[in-house]
Image (tube, rainbow, N blue to C red; front, top):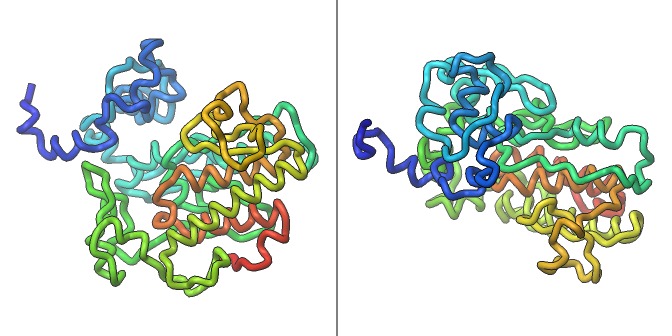
Length: 337
């Protein structure tokens, strides 16, 4: 076996989330001893190799459960099969071609659901009717590829009759995942951004970047970074979701970013969730189709911490339209990109 110190970039990779062996992303199935086919592709190296067909199996499907105990190791992203990949099929069933090396990242960073998943779930039900069998639909986590591709992937719930932003493109050569992220640590870089965006000096200052001169969040500030616009709209959307849930669905709702399934009954209607409230037996169950659509988009934006950089126009549109669908009064002071 080659000593770790002789493997190129080993220490960079070892500091990345892909190598964090004690993370829930890799330990969630330890008690059962194997990772199911639906999860193995992105939560184990054997599962990923199975999915892309690098193990000799048919590509595009995981044929068997994967053993626990692995991470996303060097061999997942560095093999002859993955080097030939240039297209990705998203959960919407839309396929995006000519992605080059980005395909190996987007194979996992695409989420597990799409707007079409929500459409299918609410089909045939009145928009404001509480449907007992409806449950929250989770995009999954860090679906940056779906954000980046916008309506080409349709990861968000897109409201009918409205245009949505497509792939967010920068001037060449700033259109690859590894132009903006360190190759092995996957941390965001600041140097490429600083070439065009004044004021960027480090990773922390990336949130100051802004091109739009339009106030999208209604606070009158067109100087704050676009990240602030996204964050403020995200907060407004949660407030609108809570108002609608209380006034229309008839049951107060709260959100917890780290407790599955994220939306719970706000029993005391104080706008926040206690530890006791944020538990599975108290999961929110008064979903209407209109509420589910907005909650899905709220989660879509919230689970991609780089959404402001990946595709701000797309996520702003999703939140604006969710707000408008809940009540037109929510958007009287907002401008849709």
